[in-house]
Structures are given as structure tokens and as C-alpha cells.
Length: 88
Image 1 (tube, rainbow, N blue to C red):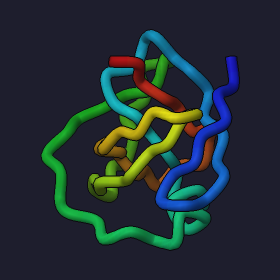
Image 2: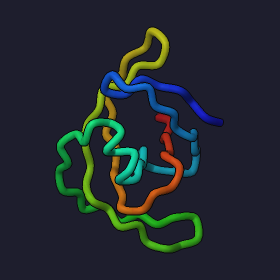
Image 3: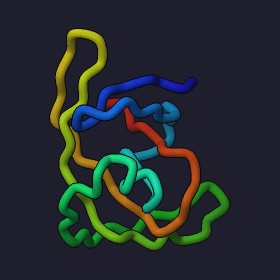
Image 4: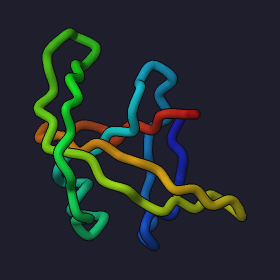
């Protein structure tokens, strides 16, 4: 399921994935979000095939979905795949 959101004022769609522990975007999508400041992250994540993901860091965003507003942390990876949304 693809969910359209407003992230940091930008229209953005993420794939809802109930199997992820973090909301993850690739470097290309991070740039679409106007390159928010990244802080280092000590996360060790892997994709569904077991291959490790190269984590570049994490960053905070403001998310709007309809009338609801949230502050979320996202992880940016070097790989470019579909941006994945963790449901809380």
C-alpha cells in the first residue's frame, strides 16, 4: 500500500511496510526532501534478502497526513529502493 504524505512541506509517497522497524529512504529520496541535516546512526539494518544496508544516518521530519501532524525520524541509506514507512 502506498501512502501519500506531506513531509517537510513536500508531497511524498511511501510504501507501508509492517516488517520494518524504521522509516527508510534512499539518498535520492532524501534529496527530494531538500536534504535535511543528517546525524550519525549506529543502526545495523538489512534488507529482506539478508544483505546489510549502508546507513548514511538519520534525520527528523515533519509529516502531515490529512489533518494529522507527526514528528518522525527517518533513516537514509545509500541504496535506492522504494521508501518504506514504518507504522507505529
